[in-house]
Each structure stands twice: as structure tokens, then as C-alpha cells.
Length: 130
Image (cartoon, rainbow, N blue to C red; front, side, top):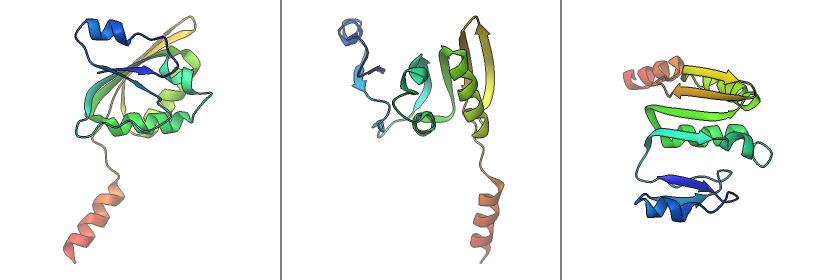
């Protein structure tokens, strides 16, 4: 599925010509994915484009919601945005597979983990025991 941002050039005809699926979407709003989730998301300068319009944390949370556990996110963006994203996904316990930067551009590859907080396990166990 190719998701074209609403303020990007109109490239959907090219995507359709190749027999692929595509839609327009504003990432500052939630993305309807029911009933599926995705194994791989690739973002090319998406996050830096939306930093001025919407909250970066909200976009990362949306990515977390639609990405399957153990799914991968590949981001190509400016170094400042890559560093910010790296801190966000690290706080969400995602595994950072690769960070690379050259000049002012960077690449970040991360994998969503199966991590769950220990307190939830304790609470669930306590409720199940009573």
C-alpha cells in the first residue's frame, strides 16, 4: 500500500499504472487500517515534513498502532529528525537495528518489540489469582 501525503505531488497515477494500491492520507489524523496491520513501513522525509504541522509523538504512536509486533520501520530523513525519532522509539522499547548519517541526511531502521511493562504482568497475575 502506497500512502501519499495530501500535500505531496500527485503520484498516484504512476502507482496505479504499476498495478499497485495507493491512497492519499494526512498523517496528522488517524489512519484506518482495519482489519490489517503491516510488517514494514518506509518513510521518506515524512516525519520532518509533519514536524511543523502536527505532533511528532502522535505520528509515531500512529505508526506503532499500525505496525505489527516485530514489524520494521525504515526512515530516511534529516539528521535532526532521525535523532528525535531514535529517542522516541527507544523510549517505546523498540530495537534499533541501524542508524546511519552522512552530511545532513540519515537512515534509521528499527524493529517493534514484543515488550510489555512488568507492572501489567504483576497486575494481571494478581487479578487472575483472586
